[in-house]
Length: 236
Image 1: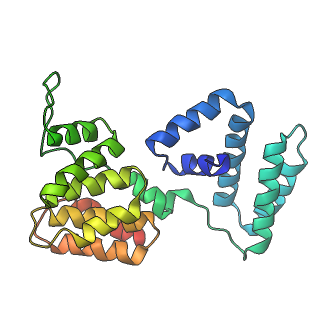
Image 2: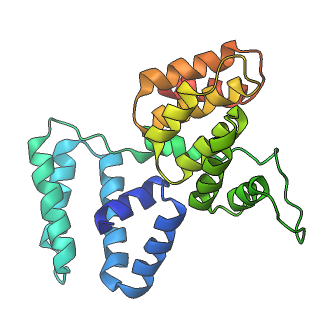
Image 3: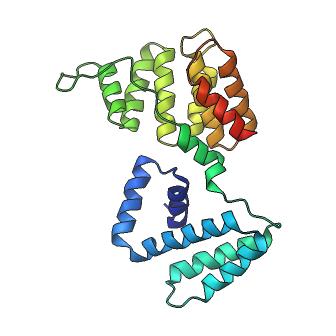
């Protein structure tokens, strides 16, 4: 993965499990990577506090600093060129970004279907699926879920598969599952509205995210009602 993108996701709090491992590896082995993190922290802080012209001037001062690594020089130069092409303000406040809100509110749905007792033998495909899910081995869990769904389409299994897809960053597939395979009459309908809202939030589609949040609030389930109200206010 591109190091610059990795740093931006770190600052936004949206690193996935495998990306966190890569981030730590770069941090330990590449001194310039740690240096670049500091630079981007300074840059984000500058954008949060200053308007366009002030930030542009600050970038000039950053660029003139001595002993800058070649990678950091390239990063600053690229950022500066982007700034010139923008209008008066570049929105980079990660606190209010949709992806950051997704990271703040998302957590995988707990395994209530097949709780695994430590030390207990795992025998069936269903047990293997949820054991992998609980251990955050989401790709493995998806493979087992697919095996289960070959024989019997089951909305609850589809729901957990969609959760696993979200965890590996396959948001579009998760949306397809949640929108097309789980009906309003299913018991987890309210939960589905919540995860659809978060999915569209991750894709920066505020309109659809708000629509699903409202659907959740209009349903009879109390699931995530408080969080849905909070998110709606933040998206106004």
